[in-house]
Image (tube, rainbow, N blue to C red; front, side, top):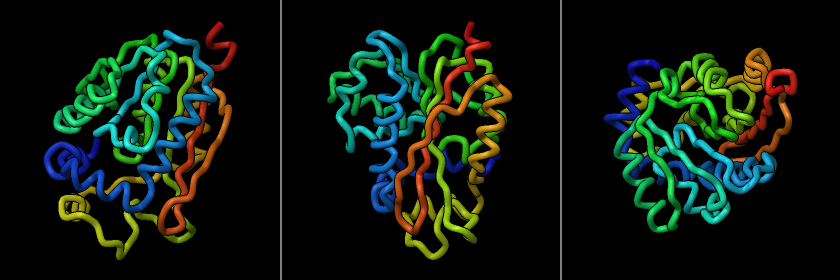
Length: 223
């Protein structure tokens, strides 16, 4: 992980600023809806396991019914212990039991066995190919990944000229997320034995889209 991005997400960006920004640009709401749809389309049975990597503060629970996760064995990971603490409080209020793990997804402590792995806007902030390698090692039965796609000509993750909270502005002086090209991700996941099963998109601010991709393990791999 780029050192500036690591510092941004562990020492600079505050939970309040992050949540304010994501809600203002509509990405928190869109990501929550896409997460709900990925969970539905994965068609898990009660008691199966769901791991959400890079879960952050759990802001999605402000915009979806947490009860949809109740049938599953839950695990949430993030690099920032303060974000995980805010997530823990949210889960307690919802009455959701879950394991919380402080984890660097590039060098993850996750072990094989989860049925569905979900990650929203995580790959943009790490070496995304290393993240895909982690998925290949953990070997979830299905994977839901949410990406940001920009309008033509806009290459930066944060819209140029947009007013952003102070801690995010400070972080953006040195930390620069890299958007992941959808086709490149599909090809990389295929190399790890995953078929692209479904795509869902939601418009957000500044003519951007959040794109949810659902992958399932190839039959030849899972057999």
